[in-house]
Length: 461
Image: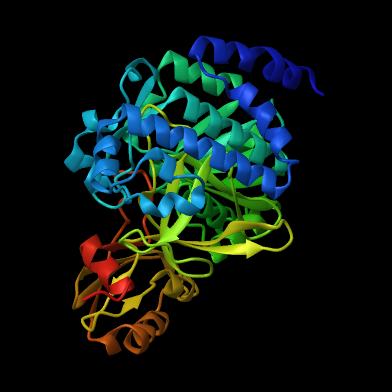
């Protein structure tokens, strides 16, 4: 063990826990032990934590007290996760309608940490997590990063953030945290011109990190820039770890090729934090010690394995503002992994707002088209926007090599796969694609209401 690794693991981070009134390092020790448990032990722990959470929510949270009474439920009716479907699902709209004060547990105010969702599916949600769930989620991330090759004291280069979140990193507490972890942050939203890309690559070369972490699209943009300019890095990272948006297969391929290392994708959301991580397969191993994951329709009815539906997650550790059966707006598929004998996330399809709805109420998945578009020469970046049921706008940023012949490949593809459904496609050539308020470069946006998309997806009138 390296000296700084020892100091960070055994002195600095435990002291930070004391200062922050958290228990991340204790949770990490526990999670390393549960990593060796069999699945029956893990699921027994899940059920035990679920029963405690349900009793707490019923006794201390006004919203859940009312929900249980309206549903004629009592805590004793929820014995295991098999019973969890008896509880109505939670959504952003439900939280807004109930009022944040009715979602918070009595006596937990001093344990709360204010937060907000990214707003990727519309209006950001203001919410709270507590220090206990933050400790569990951070410990889970450390454990899974360890499987990817990370060791305490390794240098990290992070591509992440929007202008507001980057501003928040300027606090002394945040600066200390980044410094302790040897984490260098470069704002992802600034990767919109050659000067910024060169600055990012130069900074990355100087840091020579063992781990590159951040949004897939941001890291992909850097990888494509390295390839286009024949830039050879002076270091080889142990791993690239992606998070915050859907990782596409072509992005994974380019990133792994240019950085000469393996990509591990992690899945979570601001409301629950760590949910699932890739290890040595394409499947996502769920942090079962921390969450329960279901796939449901928009009414909260479980769909079972190998069915596309809404990711519905229960945070077993947030007692300050419990998230029980929370639909976070993502679509995914659960399956059974015979190698590890447990249920895993087979695929994360993306946001509910990353779907195309045709005038005949048919759903198309635009991410399936993106691998076709990227093969067209002379197109540096693009973005697909569904304006309404009958119109899609495609924004294109040209680069060297653009020709009418190459452009016609996109036009002909869209005639075959989009326009035949009664949707007209407009093309706009722009100098740049603006980043979202989240700091991300969205490949697809929809102006169709989420409710309408979900009704079509689950075949409702």
